[in-house]
Image (cartoon, rainbow, N blue to C red; front, side, top):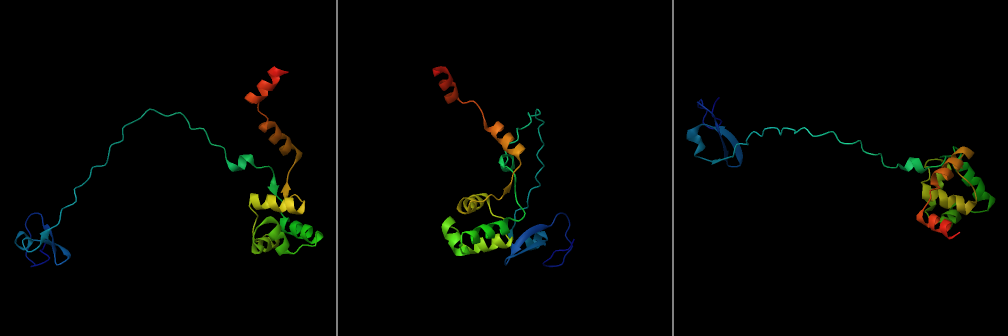
Length: 159
C-alpha cells in the first residue's frame, strides 16, 4: 500500500491520520504531520445465551373482534337519501354532527368510508343504519358480552 500523502510504500499497517480535515492512510513519517484518528475496534458479535422456551403469549383482543357486521356498500347513497328526506343540506348535516362539510361530501361520494365514531353520529342524526348485520352476529355479540359480575352475585344473594 502507498502513503496517501507522500506516495512511499508503507511497510506494515498504515496509520490513519487527520490532516487539514481529511482522513488519510499514511506512512509513519507522515503520521507526525497530523492527528492520529482512533481505529475502530472490531466488536465481537454477542453470543446469545439459550433461554428456556417461554409460554405462548395470549393474543390481545383486536378491534375487529368487537365489530358487528360490515358497512354497507351503498352507504353514501343511503346517507344522501336520508339527508334529502329531512330536507337538509350537507352543511346542515355537518353542523348537526359537528363535523366538517367536506367530510360529508367525501362520504356521500363514496371517496371516504366513515370512521366508527362519525358513522354512529350520522346514523343517530339521520335515523338510519349503515351496518350490514345478521341476526346471528347480534345474538353472538349479546351472548359474548353477558358475563356474571360481582354486582350480579350480590343481587342474587339479596333475592
